[in-house]
Amino acid sequence: MVILKKLKETQKELQDLRAALNEHAIVAVTDSHGNIIQINEKFCQISKYSKKELLGKTHRIINSGYHPRAFFEKLWQTISSGKVWKGEICNRAKDGELYWVATTIYPIIGIQGTPLQYIAIRTDITQRKQSERKAKKMAFYDPLTNLPNRRLLKDRLHQAILNQSKGRGGCAVLLLDLDNFKETNDSLGHNIGDDLLRLIADRLIHSVRATDTVARLGGDEFIILLENLDTDLELAGQQTMKFAEKIRSALAAGFFLSGRHVISSASIGVAPFNMETPINEVLKQADIAMYQAKSLGRDQVCLFRPVMLAEVEAQAQRMVDLRRASHCDEFKLFYQPIVSSTGTIQGYEALMRWQNPSLGMISPADFIPLLEQSGLIVVVGRRVLKKALKKLALWGQNPKTQHLTLSVNISPIQFANDKFVSSVEADLEATGAPANQLFLELTENTFHRNTKQLIERMNRLKRLGIRFSLDDFGTGYSSLSYLKSLPLDTLKIDRSFIKPIMTDSKSAAITQTILTLAQTLNISTVAEGVETVEQADFLRASGCDALQGYLFGKPQPIESFPPADYQLNE
Ligand code: C2E
Ligand code: CA
Ligand code: CA
Image 1 (cartoon, rainbow, N blue to C red):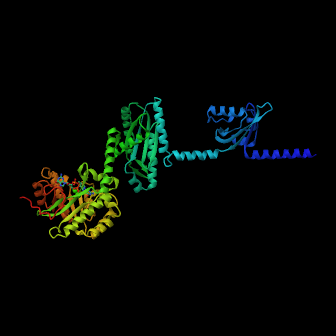
Image 2: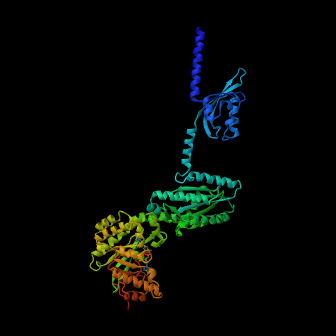
Image 3: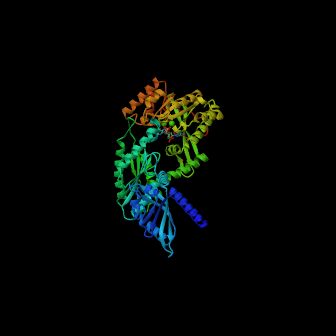
């Protein structure tokens, strides 16, 4: 009785365990050959096969083809030797859908010591696998355009080099950087900016072959990786240049966005490469070529040449030197006289020079663009202004020089800096220089952006007594409209109009028109680059208020004072 009771209890326990297992897992039992002899409901649910369809079959019926043959060979090896196998398997249901199961296969060993049956217990892990795949996609793809990102691109570059080593032709990358994307983004809004990036991605995808890769590096930079080109780098470069032109015209057609036709060109750098090129170099070379395309005026294609690398390295070295120069204050000021129509020096323009310890005196045209690119101009420009103000303060103490004005060039980047006004105020205060003898020279490109805010900035400085000159007048795009809107005191007519004034009647006529216009607007005039007496006479006769140029003096250091009045030698 007791034994029977015990047996019943054990049987009940087993039934309970089995029910729990069936509730939790997908269960199948096979014979020693792998033929299915028992399955539970969950197996049928997930595989979408009926019990009838499955019994007597092997697991091959749900093979998805995902795993290589070797995977199952190893599995069989393990279980047929009596060991438990654990792993993750991708199966295919009857309707073709794939599902993933975490699987444990337990061999039941007979008295001979060999497996008689196998019990496979599985749990559905499809969801986990899907989220893993999603995470992987996020790690390798750009979410905005769905294009491969930088990481995946690097993989593809490695792969391309591997393919090359298997004799599959040459490769090249094209680096595209959209021109003025920031402006489009700012003016049309970020949503439209995003749409534009998606449309561009789409157009690029449709311009390449299926074997090529289009990736987004981030921001407004895209990369195209071309394979199966000529193995000769020179020829591969030529092929890619042709292709790049095709891309350029594909973009030139423009895009329709929210009912608007948006133009978005790109500057394209092309770098062919082979097995010997380190991967990081490939992208660097494309980058250098792209910058070259930008500096050629954008919407251009440039092929990387090794000389470009040398130039970039030289420029990087100059940048290092410039940082040191700014730290050690190697910048000096030279002064060029500005002479009134009666022949007296009314003031000076301060012009920067770089006293390079090994290269000697360097002209600002060679280093100011670098200072601007690096933002160093803000610090260096402030120091220049302070030096100029000290000089002005000194002149103010001497009755012979206190009438002199001093003009200081201000870079657009410097003027755009929010702290500009307060720094000028502080430096005026610290040096005690008379603000009403100071001219700030601005060029037209200062006003391409935030014009209203900059005019307000000018007015704040004007209230301190400072005056403004518009420098290089006539070389910008919208000279005339600036004359109307900016609170200017002086116009400096660019040297390019003055130089041919005696030989080219058009330049003479333009200069005279500018002079008349300025007079009407109550703006005084300075002619730049006056080199001959004839030019000076012509300008004075045409009503120009002041002249500046080699005729009256080259820029020079002024250590001692007072300067003599300039007398025209008539
Ligand atoms: P800019 O403001 O137009 O300065 C006039 C330039 O013309 C000076 O060149 C001057 O040396 C040159 N020049 C003057 N008279 C004649 C002439 O009769 N014939 C010829 N051929 N040239 C003449 P520089 O000193 O090389 O300066 C070049 C430019 O660098 C300046 O053009 C200005 O835009 C910029 N720059 C100079 N100093 C500074 C500075 O302190 N800050 C900023 N932001 N820019 C500066
Ligand atoms: Ca100037
Ligand atoms: Ca000028």
